[in-house]
Length: 231
Image (cartoon, rainbow, N blue to C red; front, side, top):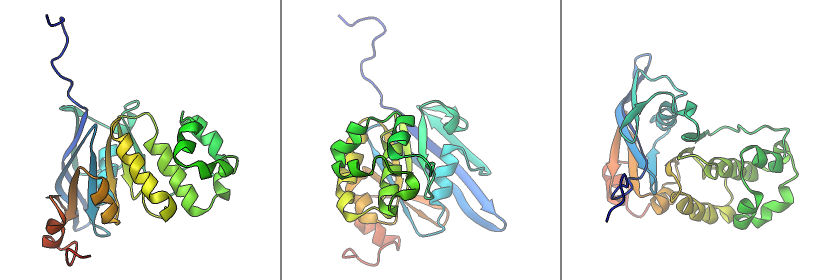
């Protein structure tokens, strides 16, 4: 016998942004774009410089002010997603962690167990007591990505997480992304499309202010993002 008030199945969290419009002066940056991610999935977002990828992420997060943007959590409209506790976090392209704090101190503030970090990146142990201002650029960026990715939120928005990451750490980061999607939904923008193709469950291309659903590499050639399949 089924127990009272128990669902037949559990629907995964979904975060959907629709009808995002933004113009700057006479230039239309976003023309009604739509994107979705779900717990258990990684959504990749490609596009040339100036295509509006960062603006789109900030619109979803709630720190940009588009002319129009509808964000839905499990079908319910929300405003200022960043203000909803433990809902979503955002990795910007620019450094954002306090320069005067050490990696160990920052991990504590984010509630992230150092053992989790070191299980994936044991070489970071030698850096734990260094201040962020003392770290090489690649290590600084990797640690910033880890703070957002490993934080206890239902969704993460990552703006170019692969940029400046050393090849030594790149493959492990991709493995970690695939592991973390079991706990949250993830949207990633990056110019390194090969990495996005490797980890994404669904892929969109930003072009001419629109979001185009991409099925495979052929679509990237068709829409002019790649010149050939061999690229």
